[in-house]
Length: 127
Image (tube, rainbow, N blue to C red; front, side):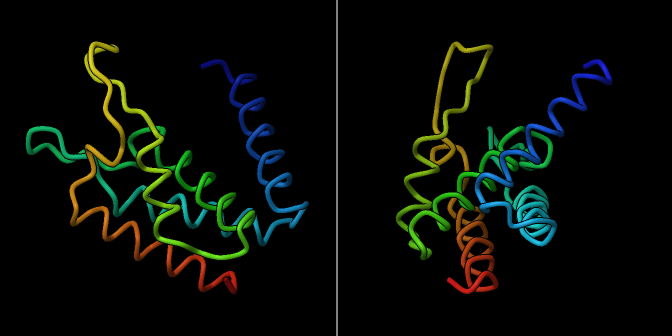
């Protein structure tokens, strides 16, 4: 990826955060980044016993943004919304030969960690 591409992606991310948070500023952006980092370091995909942490995939940021948007739109946290997000997010395997959902590839123990992370996040935001 060219340096200019990285700048464009960074700006797009900042714009997205501002749109999601109504221009909530640095505090909202930091909260979203903290959520992304926590998801990335504690939640993993399990493929045949191999643990791939979400920080090493695109999914930590995608989940953080989707969760933040869902909580903000609904004005509350509901575990079922998180389950819906996990079922909607597709994971391509074998260069597209197979497709599963995040709900299919995140083991229950790690999914519970994700639920706890999101519940704590929502509580910190006052939802």
